[in-house]
Length: 253
Length: 311
Image (cartoon, rainbow over all chains, first blue to last red; front, side, top):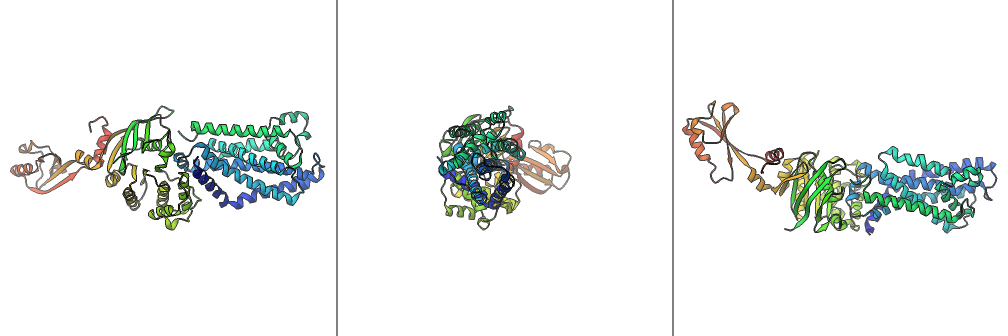
């Protein structure tokens, strides 16, 4: 294992993040604050507790997940797409590194950025609502796993994308709807039965449910199912990345 | 000298059926500078990309210091540095950070003195904290070289290092390559500027349509292939070569003011003395005598135009 190379990629990617630290942090913090104002204060004041939790607090895990998923995807997809776009990928391909090391460097950095932003949002939410985290260890574990798996997914999108439009396409057309319909702002039990059944096909439901369980001890699906779901998603992404590097799909002729 | 890079029967076909490399074999000695000369689309870049791991070979083997580039790719690639043809750099990063990144990526631990040495050698030390987008095109090329040298490779590939570069920078590049040779770095450069090969290479390989047509010591090649021409300028214009000079390989040029004699520099007798005597005997007055040697360019053009010829 070429740890020096993994470290080099990781630090180089993190440097990109710190170069634009203001944009990287201000926009998620601002949009989260807006969500709190709109859903928490304005609409939330008309909503009673959801499953024993005040609505303002109830949406916190969903909001963090929403941001972490989109950030993980966009950071990782951009991180690998940019070298493809500007041509610096030649260096990566000619370096003494294997696919696992490249993935660890890029996905590790993207996941770190997402985690960083997720924690910032959690801290921001303390200013708006009163929350107590019942199971902090599980919360952190869920957060980290989600960061990694969605960064992996983003990495795949970045390899696949042939232009900037495609880079935006998957997050916009697939991920955002899945996240919004995954129970970020509501409990699945609030839906009519038909939609509850349909929601069970949405992988994000399991992630948000598990994450919310770590906060409040309430869950839409059993926590074990949540863990299995995120494990399955991570494995699928890992398998896809392994296949990409084995075949050289879209990167090596 | 020992062989540092060995390419055996390397083939590369693309999905469309296009064969970019048709069984290239080439051994490169440690410490030499070899220029691969060929027209656009000859397969120069494909050859380099395949050796460096950017494209996968269809068949054939490449070893670097005995390490197979596929099976022992880590060892092999650590020994190679690549300067690509196109300028590809992270625009917002600082010069020194991209060079440090390259060093780390190739598995070498951070060593500021080594990076400083490379940057100084490439006249980039003053620009080390500049963002790459602020640099001129020539400086960016230097950064590419610095990145390729960051892990102290033993073999350096320069893919058309001086394409679109001004004369001064080109001379600088040649100097850099000379310095590297002094350090024992083997350099393989591709070019379609013949003067570049002529100026810095020890050996010249000619590649065309995915095949290596010839590899030879530059000096030997030029001597072997080098025909010399003697231009005999006359004081009077003539219509035809006089009968008395029919025995020589002569042509008329300059509308009959000049007799052109082609001869082989390596021949025991060039026949120049006899010719000049006979010219005088034929009643012609000499105005001036000039000799010219054919350049690598002439050799190159004749090779590429008749690949099956026994060059």
